[in-house]
Every structure is written in C-alpha cells, then in structure tokens.
Image (cartoon, rainbow, N blue to C red; front, top):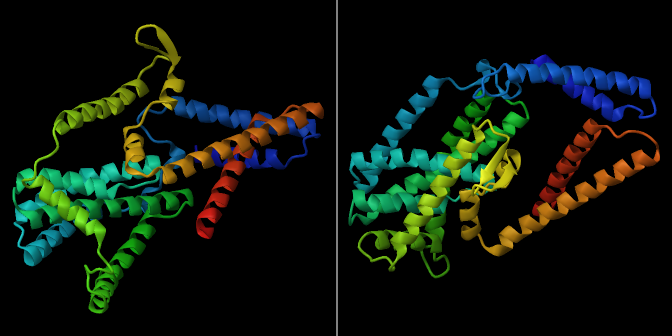
Length: 356
C-alpha cells in the first residue's frame, strides 16, 4: 500500500511536468494513475472504518514506547506533588486532583489549537479554578496553583503537538523528536528559573513599571470563585450554552457514522451529508470568536477570503487557456495547482508575520 502511495505521487509529479501536447504519453500516465487510485480505493474499502490510513501511520520503530509515556506521566506527577507540597503546602491529594483535571483540559487545548490555531490556556486555567473552588473552598493559594497546573499542561500539550505535527509532515521520527524535547526540557528548567531570578533581582515584580496584569486577573478569579457572588442569571446562561455545545459534537459524531448520503433537517429540508458536515458549527471556534478581539479574527478571515478568490481566479484562467488550446485540463493538474497555490499562500503569510 505504501508503494502504491509513492507511485501515485510520482505519477502526479510526472503529470505536472509532462508536455500537454504529448497526448499518447499523457493518456498512458493517466491510465497508470487511475490504476493506482483503483488499488488504493480497494484497499480503503477493505479497511475497517476506524483504522487510520496506512499512508499516515508511523513505523512502530520510530514511536515512543508506551512504558516511557506512562512511566513519565507517573514520575512527573509525583514530582509535581512533592514540589507543590514543599513550596506552597498544598495537600498531596489536591495536587493529584489538579493533575487529573489537567489531562482532559490539555486535550481541550490541543483540540482548540488544531481547529483554530489558538490555545486558550488562560480560559482553560479558569475552568480548573472554578472546579477547585468546590474542592478547596477558601484556599486562594491552592486555587491559583490548580489553575496554573491546568494552564501549564494545556500550554505544553499544544506546543508539543504542534512540534509533532510538523515532524509528521516532514516524515521525522517521533522518538527522535521526543529525545530532543526531553533534552530541551532539562535545560529549560534551569534557564527559565535562572532568568526569572535574575530579572526579579533587577526589577521588582509587581511594580508600577511591571504591573503584571495577567496575574491580577488570576487573583481576581480566585477571589470571585471563593466567596464573591456571581452576577444574576449567570448560571442559566452557562447551563444553556454548555448543553448546546455539548450536543453539537455529539450530533456531528452521529452524523459522521451515518450511512445516509442525504439528511433531513426539521423534517422537510434535505441536505447532502458532506455539505452539512462542511458547514457544521464548531463550539471551539465560537468560543474563540468571543475570546479574541475583532482585529485578530478579521485579519484571518480577510486573508482566507482573498486566498480563496485568487486561487479560483488562477484555476479558472488555466481552464480557459486549456479550452482555447483545444486540450482537456487534467483534474490531477488542477488539484496539484491548488496545493501549490495553498503552499505559496502560507509562505507569503509567514513573510507578513515576520515583517510585522
């Protein structure tokens, strides 16, 4: 199967570089590509629905062993419990609860980062603060520590997943990446702590020059959930939106496993399943829209719209030139052209970010 995938990519590259007037050679290459795609489709049809594509799988030799993953989680949890107990006198079981909460919240952060390219770590930490207001009522220090553990877990999980995703696209070894991350983590412990101590010896923190507003937000949240009353009608609002945005992904999962190609909405409107999935609302994207300021969101929306329009214009011009030359445009050529333009857009956007 992997050989088929490599052969298909070779055929695509050769199609892109082939002289389009050479019709006999072109038909031969298209026939070979169709045969490979047919074999690829047969392999997909024989594969269970829940099995990942072989093209996306990584050889087990390059994966991080499970015993390292679980062993590292156990050791890091014990270290966290001991350090927090020694520094802040927080009970061990409270720190254990904070770590247990940090795990699903880290998954939430990774999901948000994957869908929106933003990791709402500050908001995720507030969730842990709200929960710990019931676990440790009146304990301001413990509440802040619990929120910090959840935020740190979500932040690091998002950073590591971005690294692993980039490595996957470049066919890098996850085990080699893991080794590099471990080396960097060991050095960063001393570098970051030393830099903080050096900085605080020069500049008092907090001060008028460095008020640290984010820390004040965390402290205000801890005070709020430990005795300060919430505004009226907040709980019905929270409950209603929680139910709606829990129901949306559940319904999306049911729709994904449905065998029907067309779906009825409100009993009368019939919509294609693929169209409905494409426009299905995302609760995370909705929350990000509230969380971010318009100047951040609008720039991304404008960039996406401009990129889409430019891509369509270039593709349509290619089709018109092909029609004028009495030649049939290649579907695979159009696909490769769209991918090439997409990569060009990413490179240009990266340049804009660096220039800014």
